[in-house]
Length: 156
Image (tube, rainbow, N blue to C red; front, side, top):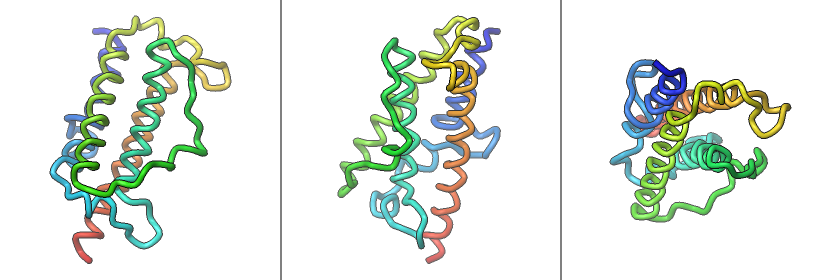
């Protein structure tokens, strides 16, 4: 089996359909979530919506590189998003998030394994493998925060 296929599967698990590592995923946590809960601030923490948008920001930016474009994302902009002001806004965002996440996984799946060891846009960023693996780890990190914030909000 191709390594890229296995890595794409791991990415899909955290965002779209898995339960192996965290017993949940973004889609499970965010689909059917009321926008008011998603945008409710708990203490000084980021909202669920901001965390989801943050992960989407990186997915979308890396997709651009996978499609042959440039790396245009910057950490300093990774929490700057338009406000979500309705259920419709929230559902529209989620639809784009799921579509871009599936595209991310598909683009990985289509890569030859050799691509994983190639430089990702600049040597300072390491290899494609390092960046894809970091995206998966980053997604799990914020998934844990989302789960905890949901629990805190439910107990308030």
